Image (cartoon, rainbow, N blue to C red):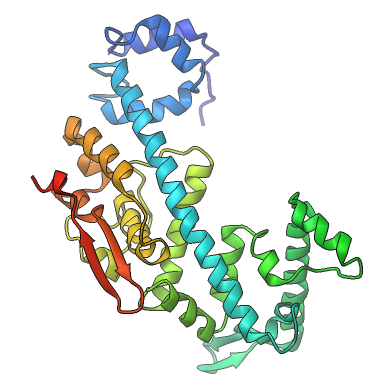
Length: 337
């Protein structure tokens, strides 16, 4: 295996390297480009450059095109993160509610008795029967669960946690409706995966997802995208490993079911229930404006027919009557002309 031999380069040397590779600085000057790469790691920036490559490390393009894609992706990521956050809050709220409802007879700390809400059954391939885990395995899981929530509570800096323990000095744990504000999306989705079918059904029904298995699948995708954005990853052309070949996606035949647009469909469909008045105009205008100028990237974005009609259809402003399940579409005339 060969060794890594690339040496440190100054900003000026990085600009020279780009020029040697065919990148031009007529729209944005070399001096301004230096300022840009002094605030955006060249390695991160190279991830956006790659899609413009005409051959290995060769380009025929203005530096401004990379900036334009970078800025689009950052704005796109910000909006997607905001949308996922709304879903996360609603999901966690409902999960805590239905677990608490199931354990209410035990009291505010009933959730600590995981036997009351976790599914400890499993399919034994040898006996070909559904069986319960052994008592020592259940006890181990209980203790691990308590350890995890204690760690989440201990490292949380919110004033409400400190106030709670200051007021209730004899307590060692917090009620689930407080804990749900402390744990992250990953911990919450794991609790959902391990909960009994009754709880899963109620949460999925509340979010208007047909089955708990579909919701579980969608949550994994949302969690992944949330983590990518939280760590400043490139989102606009992200590809999932597994296809999102579920009912919400299959209604859009022109969408690549491994693309970020497939995940966007899930987000929009769930938001119809979570926040029926959410305004998609900023996201819609951002996508329309960028890909009208750069239609060659629509396929990489996830639109197989390379047309914006799917995005216009998806991001119309809609409201849903939660009781009747009727969608009242408020069509934005701008995109119908």
